[in-house]
Amino acid sequence: MANLSSTYMGLPVRNPLVVAASNLTAHRDNIQKAVDAGAGAIVLKSLFEEQIRKDLSTIPAEQLEANPEAQAMLDALTSGWGSSDYLRLIKDAVAVAGPVPIIASINCVRDDVWLDFAEQIERAGAKAIELNIAPFPGSPKMTAKDLEDLVVSIVRNVSVRTGLPLAVKLSPYFTNPFAIIERLAGAGAKSVVLFNRLYRFDFDLKKGAVVSGPAKSGPQEYHESLRWVSNLYGVVGCELVGGTGIHSAETALKFIAAGAQTVQLCSALNAGGWSVLGKIRDEMSALLDSLGYASVDAFRGTMSRRAHPQNEQYERVQYLKAIDPR
Image 1 (cartoon, rainbow, N blue to C red):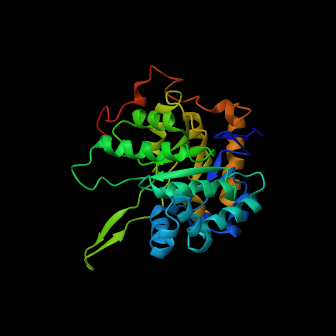
Image 2 (image 1 turned 90 degrees about the vertical axis):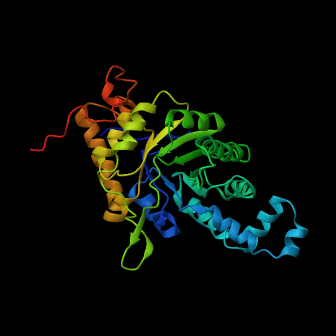
Image 3 (image 1 turned 30 degrees about the vertical axis):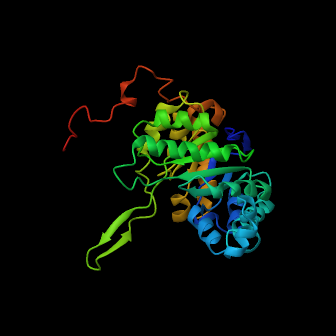
């Protein structure tokens, strides 16, 4: 069987299948199930920046006055308010994960006080941090450059507060992914996850209410991520991770062929249970064998734009001809 072991952000992984941040990774028992099922690495459920800020807002004013420094506030926070649960989750996950890397996740939109929490995460035993960054523009006054500068600033500030490797989970809505990802690499990001599947927005017309759209991806949603991994591989200075719509071994290997270091699974596990991990892993190994590759590392990038520089289909964003209606 082909060798699936590799590395992710310098961390050894037994295979490139990473369990993505979700409710699946919010409890110690599920972390144990993910490990037993064969996960290469596990990203814990995201702690939202708003949760940290809300917790900070509940600290009595006199206590804040007695602890004016950000670190003191975070120490108070983690000793008696809700975010301490996240540090406990990290410790519990590390305790059962063995050699499987545990990656903390923070969903963030700003770059100030909460940064001290990165140090707490490192002390709790996480092996890396994934920053899930998706600022909403809000008004015409905020330019594309303003948004990019904010994302880069968050990454740069976290990178100087922790020795842990950083992954950044990006949305697909940047004008030039080449430019923003290269800036992120320069700011300290070791990998970029393409792409973050954002909250789906919808209306219920009968109730006159805003509601959530479909929360889970389908197996036909991987194409844009695949396009960008293929084009970015070997051009930007960080690792690439495939995300969204990965429901089979074939799709996972398409991302590896495009140049992805790892791939993230979520909706496939929600739909099929933890056994899906082992099934995809075994089928990946068998498929690599059938293709004549001894390892996943040898297969990586074989279908990237760098490997096929003359193929204009990597850049095409419009149909060359109308879809055949037959």
